[in-house]
Each structure stands twice: as structure tokens, then as C-alpha cells.
Amino acid sequence: MSLETYFSLIGPIIGEAFNIQGLQPVLVERSESGAGDDFLLTDDEDDFYLWNECDGRLWRYKQPITLQEAIAEVTEGVDW
Image (cartoon, rainbow, N blue to C red):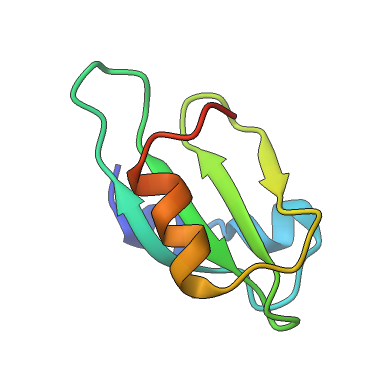
């Protein structure tokens, strides 16, 4: 699905579903296997999350992490 589906101001919003203010995408890693795209997200508190559109679970980084570190973990295929 497209970014507009999950982060549109007029439709369902992922942040509202998880009760997280300002949840927005930073990076999308497209899946070629059909396992759903992975979204790196951030919120109003500058926390980072990983969300997969098919799995539906939202994972928050427990430790403070920089944007560059979060992107590296997603693009290097960290197993969540």
C-alpha cells in the first residue's frame, strides 16, 4: 500500500491506532517477497519505531538512537 494509506490526514492514521502523537515515516524499505514493507517511523518525542504493514506490530527502539543509526539498522537487515 502507499504512504498515503497509513499516514493520510483524511484516512486511518497509524499514530492514532497506537496512540502515539506525531508518528510519521522516515524511511520505507519495500519488500520484494510479499512480506510487507518495513517502515522506519519517528514521533513528536524523537523516538524511533519499526512497523511492518503485514505483520502489524509496532516495535520501539528502547535505547536512544540517532537517525543515522536507525536507518542503518533498517537498511542492513536487522532481525526484529
